Image (cartoon, rainbow, N blue to C red; front, side, top):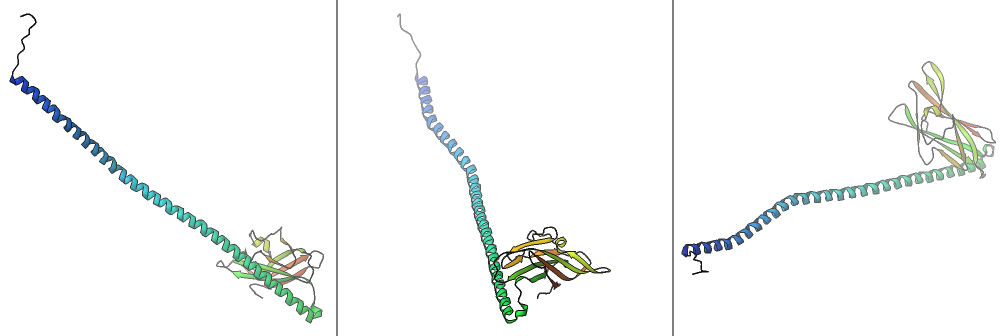
Amino acid sequence: MAGWEVRPSGPDRSGRVRVLVLLLLLALPAAFYAGMQWQLQQAESIAAEIKPMAKRIAEQESQLDDLHAQMAIAVSGASVAEKANEQNRLTIKLLEEQIFKEQQDLSFYKGVLAPASRREGLRIRKFELQATENPQRFRYKLLLSRVGKDDKPLNGQLHITVEGSQGAKDKVVLELSSLTDDEFVPFKDKLIPYTFKHFKSIPEAGRFAELELPDGFEPNQIRVRAEIKGEKPLERTFKWLDKE
């Protein structure tokens, strides 16, 4: 009959179709499970890499915190040390002022008791010497004061020499300016200018300057000559390392 088509059919073909459908249905969850496993493995791998990185970052942050703390302590310590040194300098200066004032009062009362010795003006009080570990180097400080009620500043300059012997020469005179390389002593050529009312310490603020003797030089004394504007020069000698 026209329009009719005969197609072969049977149990084998239907069975294969059902098997294919079943395999397809089973494959979907298997693929889904495999995908989940792959994602889990990737996540574990990434986590394994992140963990040591996080640990290193934590350690570095801890080190940074320690460094910040150390820096803060160092800055604080330097500030405290600087303040302590400044306080010590101020204390020394105040003590020197007190000592000079007492010496001035003592000189005044001595002058009252012995009128013949009364003389107002500059006093070369002390040239203090201290030895160091280097036998050729010494620390020194000069103290000046003034007796009298005049408040006008004293102006002048100091000429300081070290006298001794060297080799066959019995009398050798060395300029202190040539023996000293110290920023705290204001030498101008061979002289030290000064201006003060009641007392003067050279160097200032309780410091010590240093001098270095040449090899073979044997010091005997130090001579301090003070030239005073408007007055006669004043001179005094100090035995070497004498702490009078």
